[in-house]
Length: 205
Ligand code: URA
Image: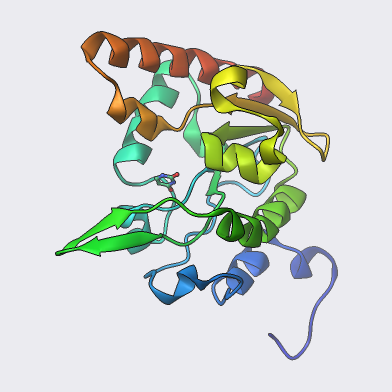
């Protein structure tokens, strides 16, 4: 770390924490990832989104939700009338976990140890951004934020009370929309996701 630790506004800024995270070795995922993907968005954002972990594209870009799932999220937010630029977007786990298959890198689900190790950084983001609403996108985000007491399919669309007192909207991960059974199922799932996202508007005012 730096020779002189500063305190106060600068010492606890989100950019300082991001810098610290760059050298994170709290779990082993840093060994094979290209970039640490920290959260992105206004430091005073009223809404903070939590995804699972960066994908292949995010790992290369060093930015969250810029690949296929991110594009899908953008389109759904647009349809829900929510401006992503006003929101802070991050992930439960900040390094890409994958298994190589030929030239491809196949997404692999982070385990509970990895999620717990990385919750340190998510807690720092929540402490510094102080959002009015947290949006949990899918099971990994929900587990990181609330443990096992909430379930995506049971609680989706609801705004729950999180332990630190910040309301939390539960919804699916946008990539779940890419795995619908058929066309009708896909349209229904997408409509429900957009309906969930509309609940964010009240918190952006
Ligand atoms: N999926 C996520 O959960 N996060 C990203 O940043 C990209 C894809």
